[in-house]
Amino acid sequence: MFSDTLPDELKRLVQNHNWTAATEGKSSAQTFRLDGPERLFLKIDNPEPAGGLQREAEALRWLRQYLPAPEVLYFDRVGSRDFLLMRAVPGQPASAECWQQHPTRLAETLGHTLRTLHAIDPASCPFDASTETRLRDVAIRVEHGLVDVEDFDDENMGLSPQEILHQLHTQKPFAQDDRVVTHGDFCPDNLLLANWTLSGFIDLGRLGVGDRYADLALCERSLRHLFDTDRYSGHFFRAYGLDTVDLDKLRYFRLLDELN
Image 1 (cartoon, rainbow, N blue to C red):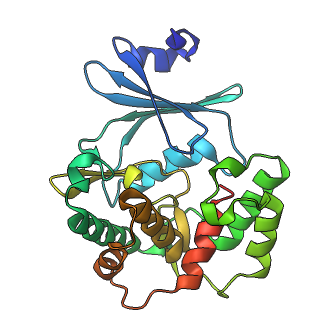
Image 2: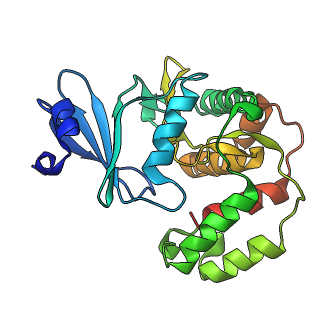
């Protein structure tokens, strides 16, 4: 089994567990669910310029001071591979069918939960997810041909990564970030709920201080895709605390996400 290639300390931690491959959205990491004396999750990936699994491990440890997230049991870089082992948290992803049966309540729960994350003092956060930093990161991805053009939203199909990057630099609709602690990929798949209460944030490799609309844009888009309607977007924004929504910023951060 794959476990034969693990570092010795990690091999000891995962012994007596059964391995199941788990999907991980757009992440390049291999992810495994390990069932045994307790449920664990293991991610394995190549190091990335923007931090990758090392950044995620550090972000998890930091966020757990404020909000629930998986406990990091092990992280190390061995040769050309990063290994991140986490203890599972209870609950189901907010995208699960049990929550989808109540779409208004789900939209409002997402709004309230995001507001709780954004209420953390950004001065306490050591991670940079500013728009300028993210533009530099995606420029590296474009340069090295790492962007999946087949995953673009319908409205951007046919554009090249270079064209999107040019638009991001020339059509930015704001001068400064509205700074908060952002998740970086805040969508129902990356939020675990138990009894309609947050039980854990996951997939935190892009967490950092950035513009609040980076999270608002991705979550609103996910809600529309989940229910094939924009009927619940208003519930999400009102629960978050927005009376007026900046549509230009929503579009901008959806476009930026195409290059991640």
